[in-house]
Image 1 (cartoon, rainbow, N blue to C red):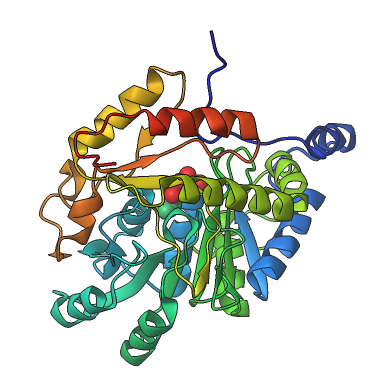
Image 2: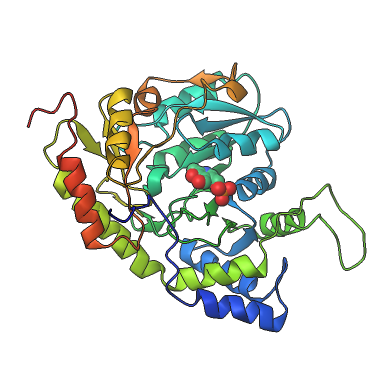
Length: 373
Ligand SMILES: Cc1ncc(COP(=O)(O)O)c(C=O)c1O
């Protein structure tokens, strides 16, 4: 009997226990407190931004970012078709309608030509564009941002899984008009559940902060708008701060794990590693490989499960799923190519070299139908 190797689990080997104990000792356990303030400071600095507002998860961060960017009910918002549901769901939460655009082969992120066509053919006002830094790899933001600036449309970065990533030397989260992060349990750093919106605009930050706390003005029960209860708790922030303290180590480990997989897969024609472009430094959030067919992807996941190794088929396109039937699309086929054919492999920062060797051995023995060497 071997130990089960999980896909991506929290790595809580720092000050997590001590900081959680401090929350209890100091009676700061709810939606304000010193850890929240410190995490906001640290995330603003990490993303090279003036302001950061903590939220209870990445989805609520996206919802607030859309509102702060000025997306209105009935607007359209361009999102990539190959993303986590939260990206498009947040658009709907804001009362807007997604337009699903395609992604590039080179980085699996929003495609310039597809965005340009989406902006040209949008059936109504476009309130925002969301670019996703897929799997921790930054999108090629400069041309996308230039297009958005020309059209006077705010660009929001969904950097949910891209903490620590860099684009041409600049931090992911510091590239568009606003950006969000997620600190879900499977992310490189986790708060248990948590999110963050970052921006350089003081008015936006004020609005984000107000909307996240019922838009209540002052201590009395007076309200400026219909707000939300989206604040991160001090307990979650205690976890998050302990994690941020170890970010550099955890990133280095994730990148080493990714490099080891890349090397082992080099030259195989049945599995293609997730992209890494020279202009980017990926955060290597969730190491994933492209299979040749959906049935190969299913076979790989089963092959791993038989060896007590957790692997999982990654995102499926959203445009062909029930909640988004009839939604406008500008697609060229790349998102469809990746839908159901990408498999994520174990890559927690706590994965040991011996565990990774077991995964590599399982990969080497996977009998894909099309393997030729
Ligand atoms: C691309 C993307 N956007 C948004 C989210 C939502 O974050 P959360 O789960 O913290 O709400 C995720 C979460 O995995 C994600 O991968």
